[in-house]
Amino acid sequence: MGPLRSLALANFSTKMARLDATMESSNGNTHVATLQKWREAGKEAEFLVEMTRGAGEVKPRTALEVAQFLAKGSPTMSSICREILAARIIDTLDPEKYKQHQKLIIGEATPANAYWIMATIRALQIDARILHAGLSNKAKAESTCTRCVTEL
Image 1 (cartoon, helix red, strand yellow):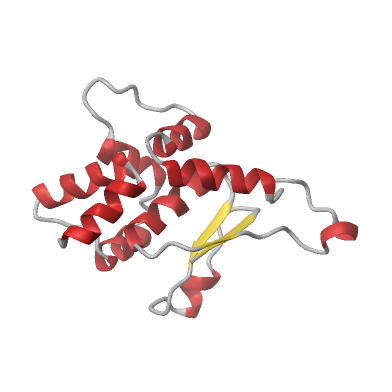
Image 2 (image 1 turned 90 degrees about the vertical axis):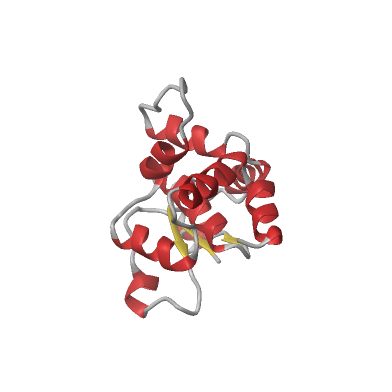
């Protein structure tokens, strides 16, 4: 792994850096092909928690605790959570005011970080999707939650 990628992961979240180090120590990685396999296997927030939980750290029991665990140590995730509240993403649909559910586009250049963002937001039961050129139309259209946050 290149030094700039390592820096991008560590800058995003201490736990993301821990995940990458864990994967590398087992001859794995957090590159796009691996993330795609995780996505296809349905590995999201709970998987990330298990991969990054340190010795003695209590396992989160609720969706909120999972999201808090994944957001802790990540200034980026803290900022995204504030943006979700500010953009009123979780408000009940008001057809007269918005005509549709509110959406928020989050740009992230590092695929592993984007995957982390998606998993954390989905843990809160807010729909999040990673959109990039390599995805099939079916993958772009997948939705498992009721609210939408679009993530690049």
